[in-house]
Image (tube, rainbow, N blue to C red):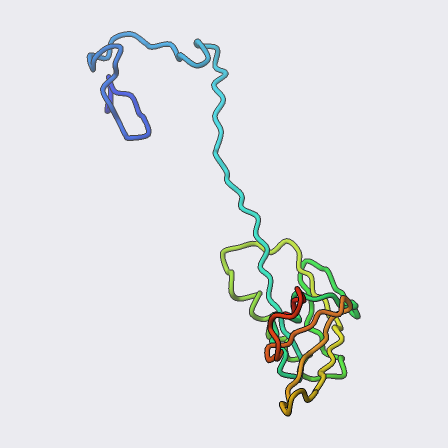
Length: 165
């Protein structure tokens, strides 16, 4: 009889602390006191994650990261366990961007289970303003429904407490 007088622990087989390896008698379970009601569990850790990607179709020189964070009007929204790429939008760049994002999300996390996906097309108004001031031609952008301004070449950076992005 193998392992007589030993006890199995997480580290493997160890000598019994009660009989010191002589294998006489039986030892009562200290957890359930011999009632046969030992409860075991498996520790399961779940980590919920959201993977967010953006595709911006915008034809001015306004930086894309400003568009992503601005307010707009949702023109299409889809929420399913697996979304389908947009294929019938009038701008082909939007269709190809949707196709690329859906494919990327299906292959980038092979060990993770996707519970739900959401895809939203959002229209953000952008106005580019060209102006001349003190013989200098430059431009700025007004964008989003909240009318944010991006003026990287603003001629007077400090004007009575005004702040321009």
